Length: 87
Image 1 (cartoon, helix red, strand yellow):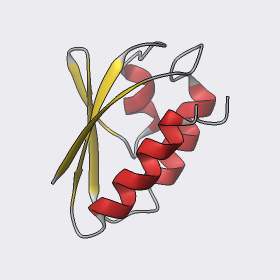
Image 2: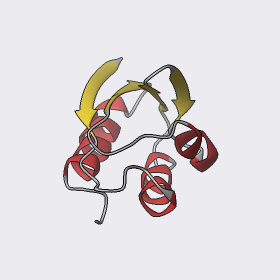
Image 3: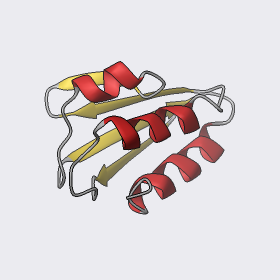
C-alpha cells in the first residue's frame, strides 16, 4: 500500500474537467485507488465521488493505492495532480 498526500494546485479545484482526467487515468490501473479529503473518503475511479468531495484549490488530499500496479499508479496520478491536471 502506498499513501501520498498532495496539495491541489488547480485554481478552481477538482471540478468536472480535472476530475474526469483524474478518473480516466485511475481507471487504467488494476489497483484500488481511494482518496481522503476533508471529512470524506472516495473512489478515485468515480467522477461523482471526486466531485462529491468538493475539493478546492489549496486543499490537501491523501491518495491510497493498493494492489499489483500501485507504484505505477501512484507515480502517474501524483504527477498529474502536481502538474495541474491540464489547467
